[in-house]
Each structure stands twice: as C-alpha cells, then as structure tokens.
Image: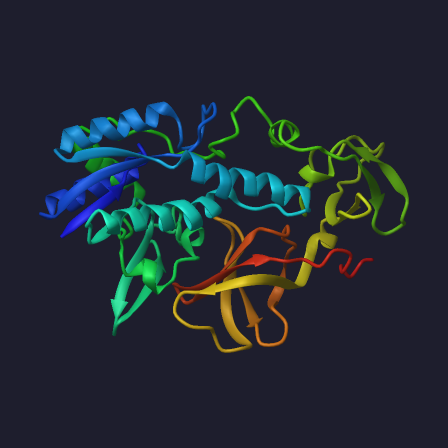
Length: 355
C-alpha cells in the first residue's frame, strides 16, 4: 500500500514511518509547515522540519513539505482569536487536527494517489464488520484519542495509527535502536503559534482589542476588583486574577461576557452535575438519546460517566459532579474504549446554579 506519513519531527511519527516501511509498504513522509510567524515551542518550529527530513533520510523514504500556512492562519489562528472575543476558549490543537491534519492533509494525500495517511497518534483504528472504530491507545498515559475524537467514517477509513498498540517507552527504544535523531526528543506541549516567552494575553492583545472586566464574588455579589482582559479568563481559573486581600482560594465559576463580569467562587462552586454541548459529530451514527457513556473534557483528563442527551437538549447528566468546562472546549464521548463522537462545550452564560 502507498502511505503518506505526517512526520511532525517528533519521535512518535518517526517510528510510525519506520514501522510501516519495515512492513513493506510504499512510504513517503510529509511535514506540514503551518505557522508563518515566530515559533520556539510546540510542533511548528524550523528544527522540526529538519528533524523529520533527517529521519526520512535515515529510514530511506522520500520527504516533502506541505505549506499550509494560509489555511492554518484562517482556520486555526484567526479562529482562536475570534473565539476569545466572544467568550469561547477553543483548543487550537483540536482545531488543527479537525481542519488541517485530518482534512486538508488527507485530501491532498488522496489527490496524490496515496491509499492511506498515517500519523504518530496514540490511538487505534479498527474495521469491525465494515464500521471503522477509533479506540483509545494502549498506553493510557499517552492516549490521544481525545484530540482526534472528531473523525468520522470517511476519515477513519483512510487512517493508519501504527504506534497506537505500543507503549511510549517502547517507541523510544525502537527509535534508539534505529539511530533516529528524534529518539530522545521531548514531547511538544505548548500552543505552537505562541512563543514560550509570551502569554496568551500578549498574543491576543496584538491581534484584537482586550476589555477589562469587573470581578465579583458569586455568593455575596461584592465587587472584588478588576482584571485587564476578560478575553483571557476561563472557567475554573484560579491564577492571574490579582490579590483580593484575603486568604480564600477563589476560582472562576462563570463569565458574563456581555457585561464584562467575572464571577468567583469556591472550589465546590466549580462543580456541576450537568454540562451542555453543541455541534456534535458522531464517529458512525448518533448515539441512543439518554445513553450512558463515558466522557472526557481534556486531553489527559479523568474519565467520567453520564447520560448523554441530544434529541431535545444537548446535555450530559454526569453520574458524579464534574468540574465546569469553559465554553469552546471539546468533550469526547466513549462507549467503553471506543470513541463514539465529540462536541463543543456550550455553557449558557449566566445559567449557573449559584446566580
């Protein structure tokens, strides 16, 4: 089979390409050039392209660079900025996966005559009776099914995930034995288009107007102070809110973006029994309304159980209270270890129980 491997310049995609080559497939590597600005973190630096090229040479496969900088600017960076201006906190890595890595990249691969695309994600794809299932990776500490939980049957049918059945330590052992320069390269952790020396407020402030917000105690209604930018506040946040003159630990429990008001409360106030969502995508077909599923609201978050409704109101009634989630974040739904879909959290402004 002819397979195009998305080589990010990290150890995981390097080993994915190596394994497929050793299995006898016709493998070509391609690195996506995404961010046109300065980058010293994440997965978009110039050194990453060089590392991917050296790995391709070492294992004996062709290597290309796809320039998606304009598409990335429009679909990921501009979306990220625009979302913050209306009170949403999106995950840019998920948007990049949705719109670039598993959309534009796959489409280009198919136009170039490739049968499949492969990546170094820690997740698994299987075909059971003609239905493609996305499943958690074997290494639970590295599982990445959450960040690609938006994939549908069309995309899953063209996807190979060679390291999904491996542990991270073993992946590094394979890279070391093969003499790959990426063998001990650390995992990327940061948003690739925000420099390590800059903050989210710095990045947003250069691209949109930021607005001050009044900080209010959610229980008493007392005004506690003011912060410089409501656009940078997220549900559950504790740090960066200034000193309020007492020893109480306060968390953001709600944000009224229209009135530029941030409500603070206790840790208990950050918990909720229900979460609301919007724009669901299903891996195969919609779930049964009210089905009991596991759900996850962050890349390395806890698994929770809840009844998921979509017929009348898109709502998750959790078995146990869960932390409130910022609007715009992603929730992934699981039936066992299989992903069945994902959606965007949609917390109605001002609809919290404490108000």
